[in-house]
Image (cartoon, rainbow, N blue to C red; front, side, top):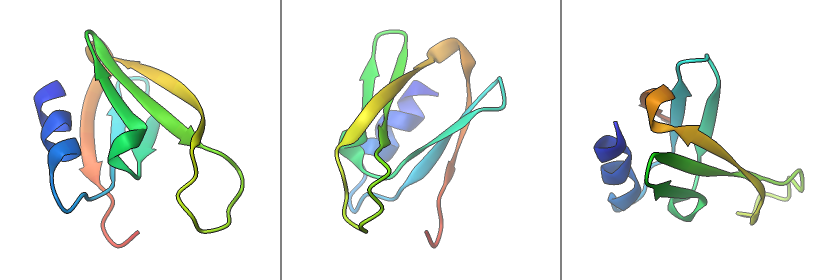
Length: 78
């Protein structure tokens, strides 16, 4: 799963995707610089509540353990 996420982050042009966890939680990666692969998992930066239509810096990040990465899905048309 980590290799798939790495490929998605390096793809140009970048296409947003959602990371699915075994818990049922999911997190959207809308910009390649808002996801950081680390040994053992992935950090996903979560956007602020500004809502001004611009790409904003993340306010916080969540850690997704590689053990709980269940899948990814493309965010088509969003």
